[in-house]
Amino acid sequence: MTQVSARLPDDLVHSIDRAARRLNRTRADLIRQAVEYYLEDLEDLHLGLERLQDPADPLLDWEEVKAELLAAS
Image (cartoon, rainbow, N blue to C red; front, side, top):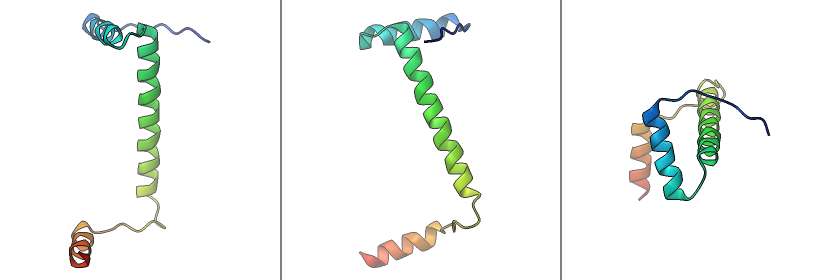
């Protein structure tokens, strides 16, 4: 596993340490998981933006969808 160094503000490190203690995990575990979650969210956002720009994927009008859903109930 590769080791990475980063400079973080003291208040952020204190928050990470408090969370790590509450979760009974190490600082490194918490930071690793936070980076993994961030990258997953970033990938989801990227995919969502790609789909919004796909001309083959029709956009739905919320008011029309809402009216159809209400009429169906």
